[in-house]
Length: 314
Image (cartoon, rainbow, N blue to C red; front, side, top):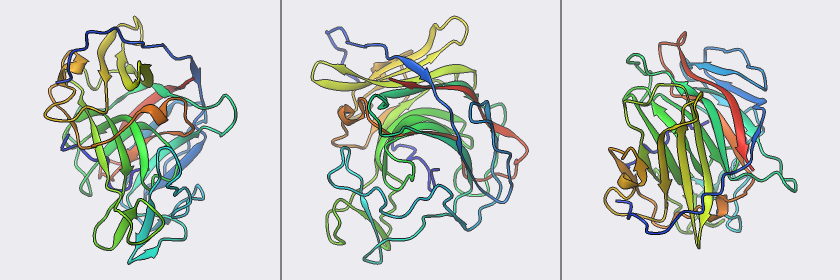
């Protein structure tokens, strides 16, 4: 799960004169069987087929990763997208990754087999935003997202995230997520302690406050529009399937408010700190879908994330 936080981005799309080739994906239901709970308040493991309802995790502890994740397990400058190398005090990091931020969630891991790559995901659910929550730490975030690997140590990601302290929901994308680069720990682009730093970056849009908190089908998938690969983002009414919010996002756009006019209704805020993010490698790629809460709260009896049907875009 996200140990630090999703970069809550330091977050006008140019109206296109061309029709988008928004090929609708084939949606197939997937199980979420890999459960993790890194907190002092234990939660029951949900069924692999859901529903997946998670209470806010409690205080942190010193936990080893339970999914067999080791530092630099997936690091590769040859991967597409690239996966950074971790160094601690100038030495390549090794051993089981510690999980020091309290978190709870469940994961679907897409196996690397012919025909199993995906280009997006969908879930039916909501982020509980009916009250104001306090946090034991500096963040309290619920999220459902795709990542290019399940150890979360410098991943490429896209998905939906809700900040329970600020009561805001975003669609985000980013590279090198959770890379610290704090003077002791560094993410590097190559397997060399002096190679170029792999900085975390992110972008995305703020979902209008008048529709967040309700139950929707949250859909996000990559499609090809000529030579460009873009994100299609939708919040659909679960009964009528009428969009309550929809965006077409070209992650290559930067500048001031790059995606404000990319959404209907228009988003109140958008940003992109990534100078060269490409969605092309995410078009039919292998990865994981994760759903959970990270951060820790005194309100450990309150359900924060409630989702049921999870689907992969094939």
